[in-house]
Image 1 (cartoon, rainbow, N blue to C red):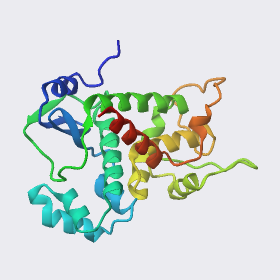
Image 2 (tube, one colour):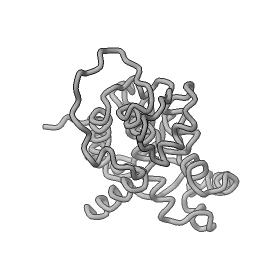
Image 3 (cartoon, helix red, strand yellow):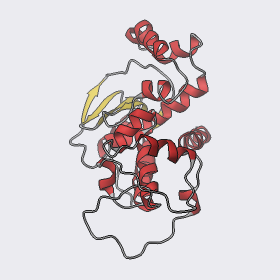
Length: 254
């Protein structure tokens, strides 16, 4: 039997509760037991994903918050005002939910508290079943370890290494390495690049597995390791492709 990532979240989903599930590393907002938004200090928020990482002008985001934040309709305002397409908002919102939930539901995130009835000013975009959030959180933990099992990488400065002769570096990797100055951590890089924090962790672990960034060691390096599967080493950006698959799976389950 699979252990729940968050027993309280599982119970709140069964109760069809509405409110905010608060933990030290983030907050999940629920409506009728489904997750409607999530945020974490460990991750860039929806605003950063849309502006730094996307095509929304920062002033349009500020306008939406000023005009519609008090009514908790920021998302609706962005779309209705022509500042953003429905699909782009939905994909970035899903990215924000799964990204923040990964950190909020992490084992070291402290005790859980629930503020019944609390809502978020972003307003309605898309709700996600709590079990889907738990399942994706668990899958992401396993994926990080499958790529390169050194968690210290996630909180250490990213130190680039010289590529080997003939070694291919993708455009996405090149952009990340260009911002890695030996001081910025993966979290810092996520904010600078406007990318989800989890995907930045995954990129850094892939780069470490390829020998393109230093791995800080707290234990001996394994003498051998199994080759990485093709789906781990493929060069395409995980952000949009993964979220589209998640969205399609959610729609199929409705």
